[in-house]
Image (cartoon, rainbow, N blue to C red; front, side):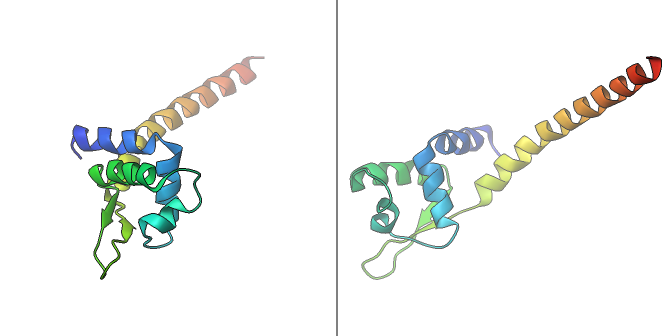
Length: 109
C-alpha cells in the first residue's frame, strides 16, 4: 500500500463519526439518510464525512434508481491492519524478552 493511501486511511479513521459509519456499513449498504439517522448532525455534515471515507477508499457509492447507497470497501482496512501487524510482532518480541529476563531474575533470587 502506498504511504499516501495509508495516510488517508488513518486520517479517515481518526474521527469517531467516520468509524461509526464504517461500523454501520459492516452490516450492509446504507443511504446517506440512513447513515445520518443516529447522529445529531446535519446531512451535509455526514456527507462531508462520507467524502473523506470515499477519498480514503474505505467506502464506495453505487447507484440504485434514485438511491446512492454507500458500501464498505475493506481493502484499505486490511492494508492498515497489515501495517500495524508489524508493530504488534515487535511488541510481542519485546514482551517475550522481558519475560525471559524476569525468569532469569527469579532464578537468581
